[in-house]
Image 1 (cartoon, rainbow, N blue to C red):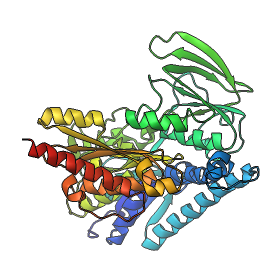
Image 2: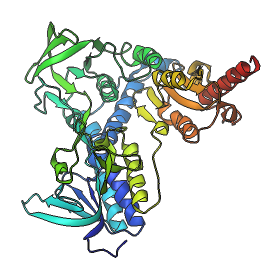
Image 3: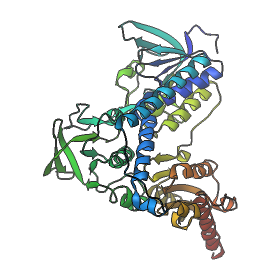
Image 4: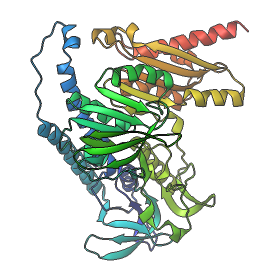
Length: 485
C-alpha cells in the first residue's frame, strides 16, 4: 500500500478510543499512519468520561460502603464516622486520566504513528486540512481518511451553562466542589452514575426526567428494582414527566419546570448547582463534510456495516467513520471495535460489526448492564419472524456469593427464541453486573442456544452462577415446550 504519492496511507481525525484503535491497528499492519487531535489525547472517554467517572465512582463507592452502618452490622462490623477529602478524590481521578493518557500517547508513538496537533477537517477527497493552535494551516494527503471526532454533551435550549454552578459531565468529573443540593437533569447512565457519586459524598439530589418514567432507557423490570435502591433508597427526589425549560446559573441556580407534554408551568426550583446529563451529540460541524458531498443526520455521519461513509446511500471512496460520530452505539468499546473493523476493510479483509453482541454497563452501586435486544425489540422480532419469545429471570437472592456479600438484591432477565433457543438479550441489575454481562455478550456473538449454554459448568460459589441458573431455566422451559408439541 506504500506505493502511492500520498503523505500517509491513513489519516485519522480524532484521538479517542475509536481513533486510537484504528491508528494502532493500522500501524501494526505496516501502514503509514497519522492521527490528528485538537484537544487531549484519549478523547472523551479518557479525559472527560469513562476513566475519570469510574475513578470518582470507585472512591465514592468506598465512602458509601464504609458509611453504611446497617450493612456493615450484618457482618458484625462497626466503623467510625467516615471522613474523606474531596480534593484527594478529585486528584485520584485526575492522576488516573494523566496516566492513561500518557500511556496511550506512548503506545501510538512506539507503534510509529505520527501525532499531529490541530483541528482536523476534510478538504475534498483524500485530503485533510489541519489548523494548528498557532494559526498555521496545512493540507496533507492520505489514501484513506477515518473520521473519529466523537461527541459532546447535549445542552437543551433554555439551559445556560457557566461551568461552575450549571455544568455538564465534562466539568463534573473535576469534582471542584460538592453542592449541598444539586439537580441532575436526565436519568440515563450519566445522570445515574453522578447521582451515585454525589449522594455517597453527602449531597442532596433532585433528579429531573422529561419522559414519563425515570431511567427510561433501561428495561422496565430492571428499572423497577434498580430505582428502589439507586433512587428511592437514597436522598434523591426524582421527578418524571417534567422539563427543565429554563436554567439560570448563579447562587442559587434557578430552574423553571414545565410539564413535558403541555409545556405548562409546574414550579420553580432553587438549588446550589445543576448537572446537565441529557445525552450527547456528534462532533461533526468542523469536519467540512460538504467538501465530499456528505450530509449528516442530526449531525451523525452515515456509514455502512464496513464503516464506509455514505453519501446518498453510496460509499464515499476512501472515507470511513467510527465511534460516537456514527451514532450506532455511543460507547467507547464500540468505537474501538469500529476502528479495527475500518482498518481491516482498508486492508482488504472484509469485516462487519455485530452491534447486537456489544454490552453496555452503568457503574452505579450496584451496577446495571445489558446486551442484545430489549424486551420490546425482541417482541417485535418474534412477531415479525413468527416465533415465541422466551423470558426467564434469575435472582441474586438465590446466589450463595451474593448472600455472602449481603448483596442479594439483584435480577437477571434473559430473552431467547423458543424455537431455536438462541439467546437474544439479557438485562442485569446487581453486584458486578458489568462483569457478568460479558458472558452473555459472548453467547450472543456466537449465536449460541440456551440448551448448549446450560451444559457449561460455572465456578461455585460465584456470581456467574446467576447466569448459569438463567441458562438452565431457559433450557428447561424450551425443552418442556418442545415436549408438549
